[in-house]
Length: 141
Image 1 (cartoon, rainbow, N blue to C red):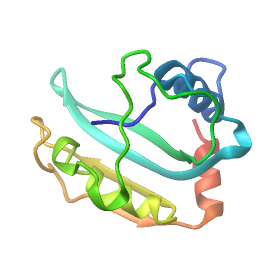
Image 2 (cartoon, one colour):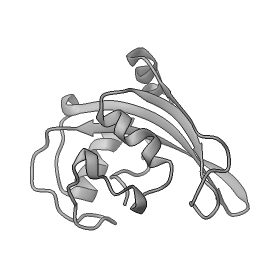
Image 3 (cartoon, rainbow, N blue to C red):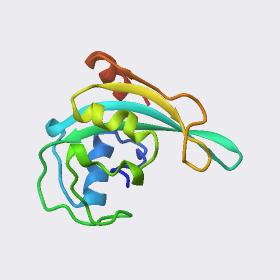
Image 4 (cartoon, rainbow, N blue to C red):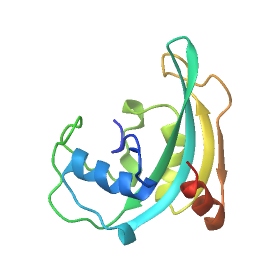
């Protein structure tokens, strides 16, 4: 199980990509002012004989318009309560940061998953950060 998202297209801001990806993958519209920036986490995955970094800009939208539906590359949306998230169906690193951002923490970090995505190649680093730091990270590309 994974969240909505994808690549930032040329000429797009992170916020514009967030809005576009949500519409494409879930069918819902979100306004920029309803997006709460929450984290920037670098995930390192081994692919094609090399480690690849995927920088993930994570946000929360508590308001949206439209009805969530299956979208581009995604199945039907599911709801879970915070105390019953399906971590066994998610990547190992997700349990290190997801509940923290849902609780309102702002985070920065890096996670190196093993090649088979069952554990960690290196000790994960997830740090609580200040809003100013998060705003700066969301502006960098």
